Length: 426
Ligand code: ACO
Image (tube, rainbow, N blue to C red; front, side):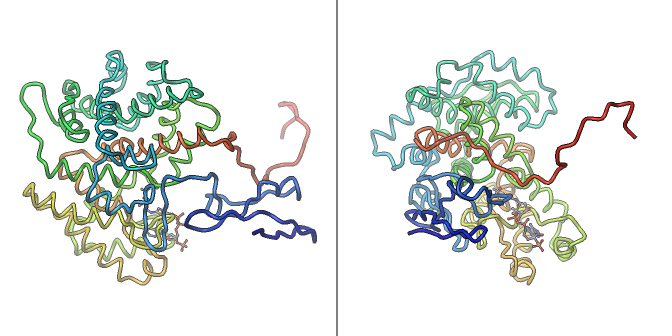
């Protein structure tokens, strides 16, 4: 099948490729050569930048599949480590593969001892994402034996290192901010249990893991593990397309994730819910969100791709109730969230614009109940998303069609003009 594109009265035929599911794509790689024209698509709303077999989203139906498996099933039945294996390798592991993967990841949880001194260069009040950007980028200075991107073995080791070390790095960022000693990993614990202990444990006493908290956090990690070609993943791919090493690429992804329109939204959503404070004030904030002259938006609402309920928000809405009940916390913020969701979903503005709660709407409530400060929320997102980033990076490295990413532009600046010496400028 082909698509015909007419430019200046001349028509050209362009191949149309079908994926396994989802929209077909028009292959316009020869468009510029044939017509001297670029396409214009700021924000990439209609542009597929790569071929991928990892994650599929149908935003209209609210469907999210990892390697074909629905996210609801993975969140209910799987574990974060198993999902990490799935994203990286394409299939769920059998028992032997599962055990081997767990062993490999567990053996990489420690970080180079010198890295601890790196933290001490930061101010104690540094945002954990600032620390994560710096420390993860710095890993390339510590693990020279896994930065040769052309060696498939080194690529695999870098993937394992990143997945294994992110909880240690994130927990150290937290410990540094509260002035407590770093805790070394305890490899007898689960991936998520180990992270909880490194974050909330102290050397002076044993740390007892609450299984409901461990399970809820593991779910949050699963729900954030990958999301197809979002801004931070595309950043990782773009950085990787130039041949940068995987640690530097993941640091680039972390920088992109930090923004409030992306990973920073869970922090912003909880701040907003706290600011609203009680259900009676909701109409005021909904009115502000609808007011064109007010830049305020309902944080945790709306999504570039989902024009239906974000399936991850559904899972987390239920998990939030369970965690708060188990911990015996009665947080008015959960009542405010539920009421805001009800009001917004019955409001014409939100219905017409297809604005539904996204994954960030409830995750902050759970993370706060567990004891994480809001500044750690995006760092946890980065921890989980590292798995998706590194799986996407690996896929790109194995793709023979991969070229350096180089978008074009619509130039609207000055035409050529002559330099005017400083003393002759008006
Ligand atoms: N509250 C109020 N109005 C909104 C909201 C919102 N949260 N989100 C979108 N709108 C409105 C916009 O004002 C716009 O209205 P208009 O057509 O009258 O101008 C329309 O809906 C479309 O919005 P865009 O910004 O063009 O949609 P886009 O797809 O570019 O943005 C985004 C998606 C960035 C997520 C947006 O919905 C938003 O800012 N939401 C709040 C931040 C947030 O929760 N981000 C988390 C995303 S999920 C993640 O990263 C894991």
